Image (tube, rainbow, N blue to C red):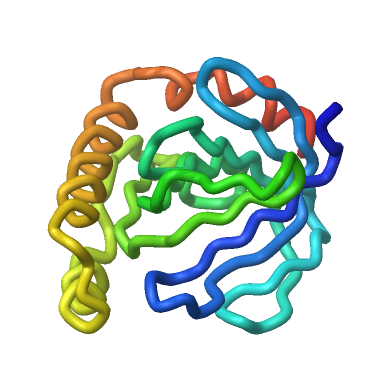
Length: 168
């Protein structure tokens, strides 16, 4: 039986800390593992203690090069996807991801989809020597997400709302 609490650990490609927080396992389905993070959750962001001010739901796909964060108002991003290496699970209660800088975001008010942090991706690619295969996977994931967040592909249209309702 899987644990109710999952520790989510994001690192950067060089191994430095990025994000680290506990989340509640909400469900598993054909898309991946759905995790809930309520407001007030203590976390670490860029190696510094933090507290989540707004709840969110994280989808960790089974094999994708991304994670999806689904946010309620007042957060301006309705959906925020990090391009990351596929999840590496340590048992059932710790998931490791490597954040690859690129983000694909859908804005709540306008529905506009944005590709963000291309400059950071290029800088880190040069500094840390991202392998060509990793670059190709990251860029392909960003292209797919850019389309999926804009065209009504699930879970980005409405299906995430049932999980978000459990943490707001």
